[in-house]
Image (cartoon, rainbow, N blue to C red; front, side, top):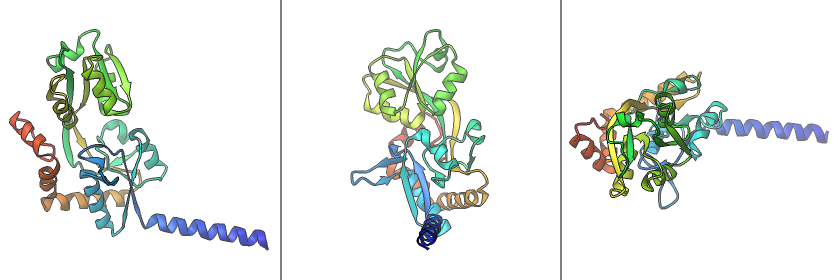
Length: 259
């Protein structure tokens, strides 16, 4: 009887945990990318991505739990059901579509280049010269692009933005291929040691990652994104987090990421 009662108790606890899990929308992100996803001074996850996640929660009528994890662990966590969505400045690439689905895009950006001040790289075409040494962040589309398009380059693969920037600042690499917003921000932090080549090497779109087979959830995300756009929320997010970047891109004749 004791064993039977124990088995029944375990079953009830498991069912209760499953029901509780279904009532919460769990969203994964790598909170090292301000202003889209980062940890504030109070230790809370915040940024553009949390605003989007909260809007999806409202659309579904569910509370939201944000989980901070390494970028290269996000897709495995989604596939195994540990999280329900990825909202983490994730490029909707063809390679990633093999393993997960995506919402409609909410950001249009492009790969650009942060260049060491004394690097011979003056334009994107110079990346193809023999012997180029380039920093890439592991598991990003910048790394994928470099491996596909620059097979002769010597790549330094690192797992954080900070490590990639340090390689450029110290002149140990010629350049780092990454997204426009990051390149602008890191150049602004190191104006004496870097240059920013913002003209996109390739245009990209960011979208919300959804597990395959969850068309209902993907459609709810799309409805939430449509409401945010219709209500002018992306413009307010730009005013709050990205005003300097918006002005710089427009001054260079480049479309802003939410346009």
